Image (cartoon, rainbow, N blue to C red; front, side):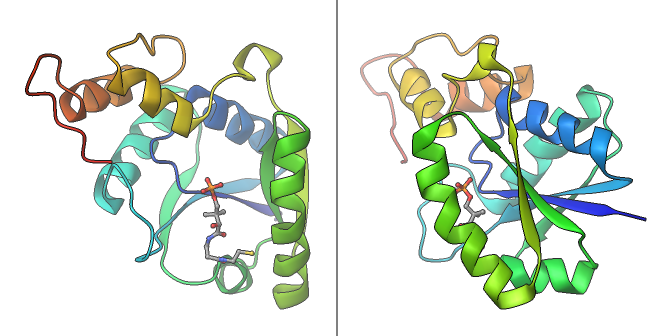
Length: 167
Ligand code: PNS
């Protein structure tokens, strides 16, 4: 059995993430979507919300993928899970520059290789940070996230003069 771990903050999960997870399911027997939690990082959505939204997204896409939290080092999670590889998506060179040191570190810590896949070009503009910024300014995130994520973003960033901005 081969097992891929697809890690990320998923704050929130996007259809770009779902596309990468779907590609991982075509290459590995089993896939775990690993939702990282870093207590020093400020998330828009708490861990339970990010897990729920990720579960809804993979189930909605018909993917048989487990969604689990990662509370410590990803390398330890991968070793404990018996992961064959970490799978991440690359939209372009900037992603590669950010991912290379993490891939090297994770391999040094655990021996687990990182496999990069090029996601759907039609989703190359979709990033959690940009989606949050668009939603914060009342823009449409349709086609970038699931309906549940769009609803959660609309709740987090209500329209009007009293609009809250928790991030
Ligand atoms: O979606 P992101 O924020 O780009 O994902 C980054 C993530 C969560 C994969 C990375 O921060 C991570 O692996 N965090 C878990 C803690 C850890 O192992 N840190 C060392 C990474 S080399």
